[in-house]
Image 1 (spheres, rainbow, N blue to C red):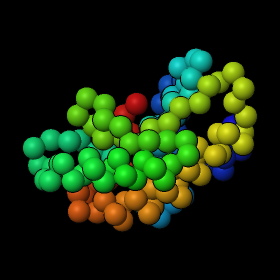
Image 2 (spheres, helix red, strand yellow; image 1 turned 30 degrees about the horizontal axis):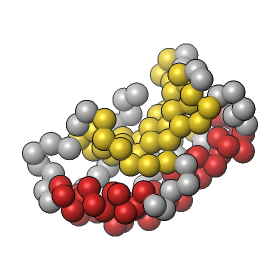
Image 3 (cartoon, rainbow, N blue to C red; image 1 turned 180 degrees about the horizontal axis):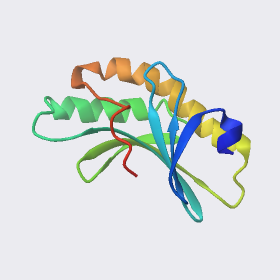
Image 4 (cartoon, rainbow, N blue to C red; image 1 turned 90 degrees about the vertical axis):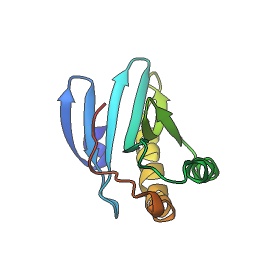
Amino acid sequence: MLFRSGAVFDQLDPTTWVLHLDNRHRSRVVVKVEDPIVLFSLPLCTLDETITNREQLYRTLLELNADFMHNAYAIENSRLLLSGALQTENLDANEFQAIIDDLTMTLDEHLDKLSDWKLDTRGTTEA
């Protein structure tokens, strides 16, 4: 399915890949298979003391979640992520591509709205 997506990717280990998306922000998405789930994760930033106006950031992220069909903003430990998941049992190329398209199309618009917080989708690729 990775080959069919047309995205350039690097394999980190037997179950983890980093997709290099061809969107305006050149985002990188970590794809990890943890059977029976395929996880999609796009790290945006670390939420540390330098993030200003956090309450407004959280409100904005919740409002932006409504734009997604397959994905959502989430916080894991101190990292802000855009993430999604699909079951591997009936996963086909169309479903896989739908997640990638949802990330790509919506994220470009969202990152403009989130520019005050200087989020970066290219730097972090940890699974």
